[in-house]
Length: 392
Image (cartoon, rainbow, N blue to C red; front, side):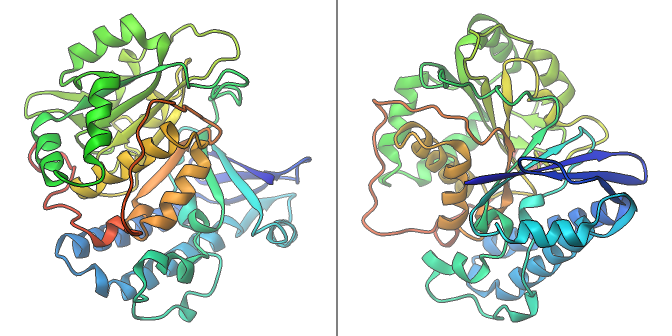
């Protein structure tokens, strides 16, 4: 499958765009404010979607998804709206549209670009229905023009080297560290009592030990075994620049950057993936952001969220991701695309900001067997958000 690379470098007023596959197209520039406004509008509609889900009214979200597609179409227009440079966006768009249904997309961005490229919508939103399809397990097919659904898409900070997810030596031999908000995890886990995920959660406790709950514990654990860790998992309240493990226990993104000190790894081995399961961890902030903190030597990026995320949905989504990585042995990019489709539309809250070829199979991981296809968006999604200030 062809991999299409899109390099985005920021300045105060413009973004420089370079498209390539085997060779590079000439670069062109686009309007920075227009792109940032599109990103803001997409995330605003995502918040509407979350509010509707928490009210138990997601069956009526058809008009919201239509607005989300409309904003995604605006973002695609902005990506090709040239303000300068030698490149011809119309020619580039025509060329890459030929590979629309059988290509991987990788955006490589500078550290000041926080855009949910996966929520670009490449069709006419006016053709979408006002009512969500009754078959919610396959509803994603109606909205398949979202790039997260039609492509394996990832966004990678430009300082992460392409071999950071390993070559022949993937993350399978490595360990896992979990850091959680204990009360929030306990409440969400209790809601899954008797569910197909319960045995997998029990196995996680055996595999990685009881989760850590303080920044001091993380610092000590990373110092001892950072070089042997393949996945760093957070489940807590969060914002664009803060992780809250409790009312008095918080980690700023800038502090996390210092805590996750560069670690030496065997040449050719995989870096560590960070799963930031909390609200708005992918949106960026002037006070610090997670894209830099998860790009240090020995790391390969993160999976984060584009808006608020409901607590139970967040736990179930992350467990499903771990199952696809650990049990099925899938590459991260393929696993995320499966989840985008299986748990649409709330799955669109998540963004992949890591190398998509990350792999971490664990032969001893149990399977999660459900009696029927089940879209977590239409199950119990939660009663709260994983947002700083909501129970943190």
